[in-house]
Length: 395
Image (cartoon, rainbow, N blue to C red; front, side):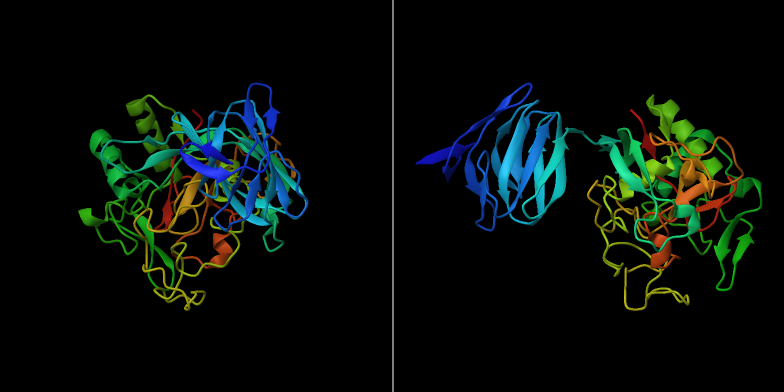
């Protein structure tokens, strides 16, 4: 006997029906790519189990193998999955869901599947787009015990759904902003920006957003690099221009949103890709192409300074370069003690301050500065050859 699943057939061991508060799903048995049975609606104690609470319609896939159709409101029990990581997807025309879940022995893992809205191009002619990030609850701060005081205490935070740009804002995007507004950046108004001369960060006249990390004017072939030498003030001016141009409210990410996103929905990750140390394949950082005392000489990411955006793999949320390349401005004022009194829901930082937060590390930094929970701050007018930004939006 065989059961047809959208054009495919698989042997049926047992069939059950599970009813949720708005739909049903018929249980069936198929196999994953390793030949292990995936049983829906049966009881198996050898492996782990998964329960999917569906807040969407669509086609369910486990490890890229089509299982069947699901409906909004259904609760889907999958009672046999081997211990380890599994990719769960639900595909629908209005938006998809995808999550990597970790199955533990003889335990039930419960997830909620909510459709991810389709990505949106930010500006025609530029490849950057806004990625929908489904909100959730996570433990923010130093989860590994190797952080600084301002990364503590670890505290539980809930963030609502938001959007974040897939890439850092590029030189090309920032040039369009300047061309259309004649905006004068802080570097233009205040004697240049800071570059590393091998010994110190030195303020250098004439260096601005047009320049690379050495202070040289970039050619158009490098317009896909992240814009640098930009202050928090400059980044906010860009957001205001883009908001008026598109009719959508762009801003910088709040610090809690940024950490939630870099950790792919708040997972216990040290870096954007997980917990393995950077080796040159995941991000742009201080490697063999640099000559710092802290450079990781065993790694080669291919670049001495900035890399083109998207050169390295995206994290599980679909975001590129969240670790390394350039530091990214956040909306928040900085307070080293803020975590002690942070609101539990959608924290937005102190009401006032003197410094703004940056996150993520850069081409200049070693692994400890690249950690997902690491925080730095500088005055809003500060700019340097490894400071950039990416965009966020609530709706």
